[in-house]
Amino acid sequence: MRSPVPDYLDEVRRSCADDGDEGEVASYIPELADADPERFGVAICTIDGTLYGAGDDEHRFTIQSISKPFAYALALADRGLETVLEHVGVEPSGDAFNEISLERNGRPRNAMINIGAITTHTLVGEADASPAERVERIRSGLSAFAGRELEIDEQVYESERSTSSRNMALAYLVHAQGKLEGEPHDAVDGYTKQCSLLVDVRDLAVMAMTLAAGGRNPVTREQIVPAWVCRQVLSVMATCGMYDAAGDWMSHVGIPAKSGVAGGVLGALPGQVGIGAFSPRLDEYGNSVRGVRVCERLSRDMGLHLMQAPEVASHVLYGVVEPDADADGVREVQLQGTMHFAAAEVALRELERVPQDGEPVVVDLSRVASTNKVGRRMLREGIRRLERDGHEVRVEDPDGLLET
Ligand SMILES: NC(=O)CC[C@H](N)C(=O)O
Image 1 (cartoon, rainbow, N blue to C red):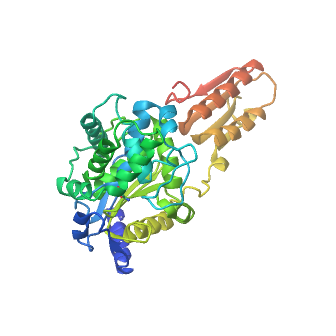
Image 2 (image 1 turned 45 degrees about the vertical axis):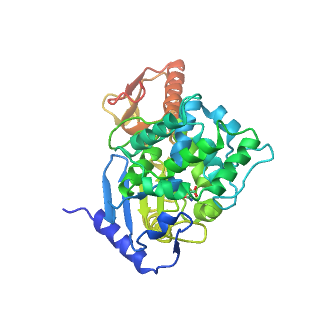
Image 3 (image 1 turned 45 degrees about the horizontal axis):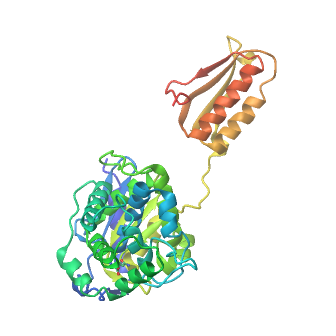
């Protein structure tokens, strides 16, 4: 059998291209104005590292603002949440990406808009790192997310550097507020290099899936940043990733995402999928028109909205064997599925129904696919209480789920 997924992705790409060619290629960075507006690629990466691509999926473009969540991730990993929060907030700005969005205490509102991203750039690496060391930490860190060595597009870098007065003004403003580490000029120069890293949509899909998989690159299997960092980054992406269109995006598409002015869009759905899309024409917010369309289609077709309530709790119980129905007369509670808080609560209610007759009980976990920390703790506590009530409890746990 040939998997239908590539055919589906091709079809999505084609229909999103057919839906019109609105939007304008970014031109405030002179080099970007030369981009071929018809280029259009899309890729998705699954949690086991399988990659599907369609269209111009190997065409390289500069990452631009999609570097922001990853630089934020590295800053969090290198300097810790507290230090990063002292310099950059986590509130949506509702403003355009290059606005002066400062809180009253002088802190940029979030790390997804330029003013916050330039500040975040200076927090990557050791506190006393030189500007060059910082850029290299970012280049190699983003490469680890992508699973290959990324390079800077020198032409785009030079082009943006020659027109970066606005970013320079933003950096000086943060500096004046005492929230910028180092010199404004170094911050903007390094940030511009960070934005000039070259990627294709396959890279974006892997980078997105790494964020969506708690920091483990699904292809290289390397743990790039701790899981708490990804949770923080995805939260800020969900609320601030699409600039002033962030609320509309979250309710409509429901996937934490980030766009860049070169035309890239990255979407990361926790635990499920990483999406990369690219097409240079931008809408009024600076988001790729076709990239946005692709994400809308994928979300709608595949049920990827983050706030779509999952069906879980009703399928926790595989069965209960009453003692008289079983030849050896032992009560058996058979569980299945994924044991997180809601599922374990259902399981505990079933254990609560076991009569206090001092008879042995089997808790069968052989059909349980996985547990998280909370699910494990709750099940262990249920078993402890059954034992305390005088039951001999045998736990069938062939995969050692309760031991980890
Ligand atoms: N939205 C973007 O992608 C902006 C990134 C660009 N390098 C800038 O700072 O203006």
